[in-house]
Structure formats: C-alpha cells, structure tokens
Image (tube, rainbow, N blue to C red; front, side):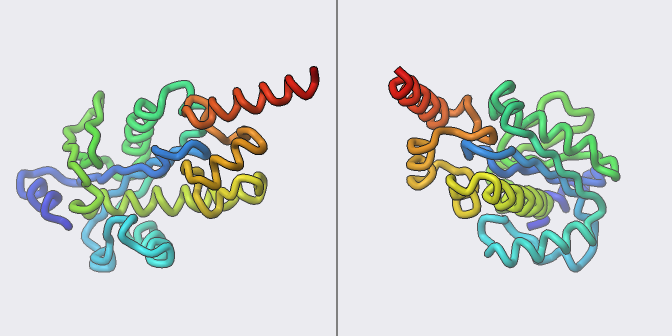
Length: 210
C-alpha cells in the first residue's frame, strides 16, 4: 500500500499527502474531503481502502489515523455550494482546501482518480488510489466516517428519508421518500432525481391548492 509513497520519497518528495472524498455520488448531504500525511507510525499499517472495511473497522482506524498520522485535514462542502459549483468542481475545490489546511506542509499530493489543477505542489492522480496508496486510503477512511456520522445526525432531523441507512445515495427507498414528501433542505437540487422530485412535488401541491 505504500509503494507509491516509497517511490516518491526516494525521489526526494516528503511529506506526501493523500487526498480523497466521500459523498460525490449522493444526492443529499455534504461532500466530505480529507487530506492525510501518514508519517511513519507502525500503528498505521492496517490502513486500507474504506470500502473494503467494515463500519467498525473504519471507525477504529479513524481514531488511529487522527491520533498517529502526521497531519489530518477535513473539509465539508454543503449541498448549496455543490449546487452552485457542480459536484466535480466542488470536489476539486474541497481537495485544494483540505491540502491547504494541513498542519504539515506537504511537498507532494496523491489524489484518488482526479488531478487537481492550481496546486502549489506537484501531484499525481492515481486510478483507484484508495486501493493502492496508503495515504489516499487513510483519507478515504477519514472522509467516509466523517460523512457517515453527519448523515446519521441528519437522519434525526429528517427521519422520513432514511439517511442513516443509505447515507443520501439514490437507493429505491430514498427515491420513494423523495416522491412522497419531496426534497429537503439538505438535498442537492442540481442532481436530476432531486430536481425531478421537487418539480413533481410542487406540481402536486399546486394541483391540491387549485
């Protein structure tokens, strides 16, 4: 998992930051971006792609990463900014912000899949980087656990949508909830399922009022 970092370190690049996001494909809730500089602690050897881990394992590694990594930064981009920028631009902007907020100034960045333009340091976009780069995997864990916890909290305020179970992704149950009650304030109205549900809900209300 550290072969990319090791090769870059051999070439004189250090510290190295991994960057990843969670919630890009969801139609509700925030986009969460994390940047992590792992360092050399042996306690971080269990870091793996967040999607390959159980929720319990992710939560345990979340605490380990925050305690033993050299630096961790988290950026939360709310739905209204996602709607304003578009999800891809919001994702890239979140990556820039996360790198800028690190307490340790990275000399190189590895990102999961997407190159980041406008960085003051060199970077490498690695396809499925969260599966092959330890620092990106660590960032994926931080982003995923942070976002999941936010969605569980939102579930308490918006129980009709079932955010605690599907975390805002477009599942059949989520689509049914959108059709029944319409979108909430934490939905992304630039996403097609949400805009369609909003239009249908407004049309239904207009018909009832008329």
